[in-house]
Image 1 (tube, helix red, strand yellow):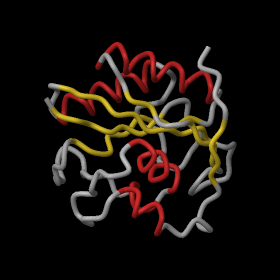
Image 2 (cartoon, rainbow, N blue to C red):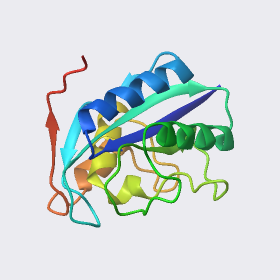
Image 3 (cartoon, one colour):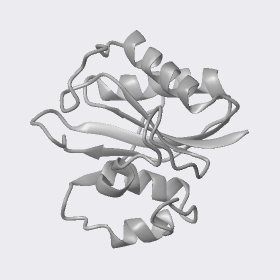
Image 4 (cartoon, helix red, strand yellow):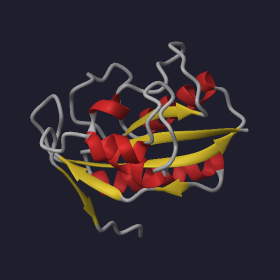
Length: 162
């Protein structure tokens, strides 16, 4: 069984789609560990703010199977298959970590955004502070402490799960 970490983000009806993602991922994995929900400004384009979070789960699925299922969930909830990278979205689900594997296919793991985007690193550091990044050899807590927080605006929000 592999321990995985997944980022979830949305800036179109974001509270609704964060709830939808959690419901879908619970159906797929069962029990989930959830970070707080964070609001952040759009990165790479001008647009509405995003809600973001990270979840942890255990799975028997391989990386390719996970990525396929995440894309299916995104598409079921309004994300176009050919959606631009820097654009508004109903749902963005990305595999961040699969155990401590370092791979380039079928996706790059660990995901680069862990080290560059506060909206990924802060919730990951909250959820798994002592876990060590497989290539930097630093814990996520240390990486967050060392992160230049002036790069991106990000703040935790009270989230209504109903």
